[in-house]
Image (cartoon, rainbow, N blue to C red):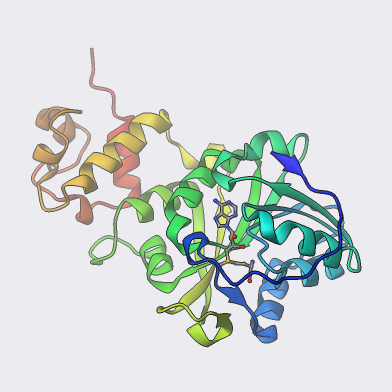
Length: 269
Ligand code: SAM
């Protein structure tokens, strides 16, 4: 992890597909994101993937300071140079998946923002969940289809592991949809901005996060199978029933609270 210092430059490199670089250029969309984030004095903002600064510079102008994590070395110089006119940018050159948000937060909570590289959306979301205790909220631009999965409930075709894991730890609010034309180059799909607000640990109610994650993964890993079969390596059908869940049900029929109950259930000794 290297912090970058200023040297002259401008954005000359073409967007890199391998890094999910679709740069936002529609001012109205940026303004809506800044309004949604609505940073307050004293808060610490951390942007994932500042790119060519579409959100970084307006946020800096509004808030004065920002930490940003960018993987593409070619963007560091121009970002640093251009940011200087707007505020104090703490630019970290790293793969965001290697960044320990808890260490970065230190004493106080952080707020995450980002127009995420779509090829890494799920790993970044799960990585952020691991550090939910230090995150006040997250505002992310993602593929609309991913946001729909995140926000869906039992019975929906797109309800799955991502929905359960995120909703167990956060409230998920889809804010607005953004068409491909707002980006250069335009992605093939619609996008949407989502707000994730981690719940306080006392409200989450999961006794063993690892066991919870294992059960949700196994249940949806074979979503056509009954829970009895999908969870056979983790628990007996009798245990599923004793937890108040029908072993013949499928994962997609269970509410988030059902998964929590199943994971927390301890059979009497
Ligand atoms: N925020 C800019 C915007 O809205 O125009 C850029 C968004 S672009 C969709 C995604 C950004 O994430 C790019 O700048 C890309 O280089 C960066 N990125 C890709 N993979 C990354 C990673 N693993 N860690 C940190 N940044 C990454």
